[in-house]
Length: 105
Image (cartoon, rainbow, N blue to C red):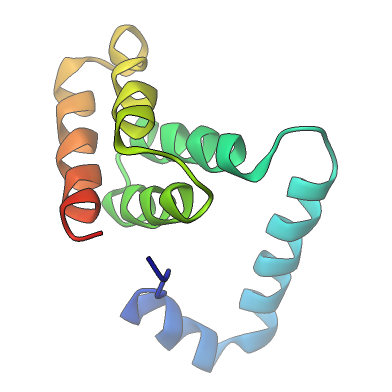
């Protein structure tokens, strides 16, 4: 599965390329700063995206996790682990958003 940035991301990147470049460099740099592998990093970021109820970020990090080798059951488990922290309704929303991507991969 290829990760295609959203239309909004591409629009902002065209309008503010230095800003987006800085964000991309920050993301790359942070991932290189420690021992966590890319798949785990994407699952952590997926959990964070779910925690802030960002549908777009859940879509993005689900795609990125799959590209990094995560299986659907790992994505679902990552999200259901959040139930006691962010609540059942938030987890259900995140599962729905992740499933949008999983079903189309």
